[in-house]
Length: 181
Image (tube, rainbow, N blue to C red; front, side, top):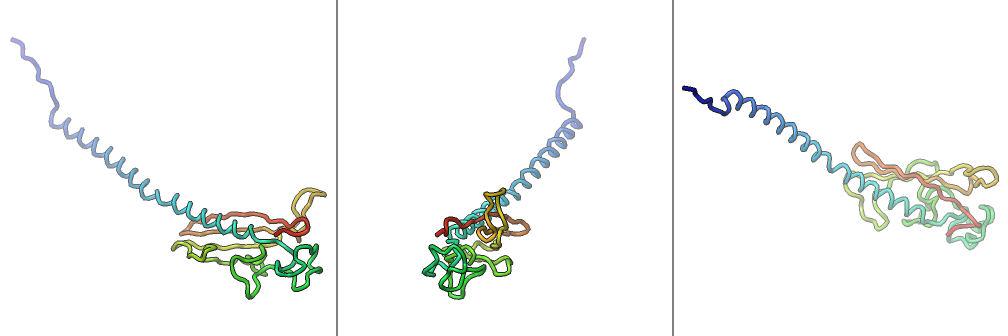
């Protein structure tokens, strides 16, 4: 008489299967946990980018004239010597408040970064974010005869830091024909 062999798993095979599946599940859960922990970083970077873009737009939208925009000669002055009052220089005037009336008001006279803690509406930036603006003369821009003189170009750098990360945007503003309001 022939005996039929029973089919199934032994206890050892079952224990090995459970161990292998457990190791795989733990590895997958660790990957999911790491991705979840890092998922906030893109949101923080996007917030920093929005702050930097808003501040850069504010700076670039200001006038860029030889004279303070309140000066009666501001619209037609082709040099600082033609201003009726003090020519515009880097750094804000004492009584000037945001939004400033000239691009150069957003920077410091020595070219150092200026810290801003609020947006244009006066709302504080979210906790953990710090913004700086640096405005300096750009130097001569462009090739050959199409060159923009150093006095007619400003380099604007906006840096927003959050934690150990930062976002930096850079732009240039030029003065043209004869002034730009």
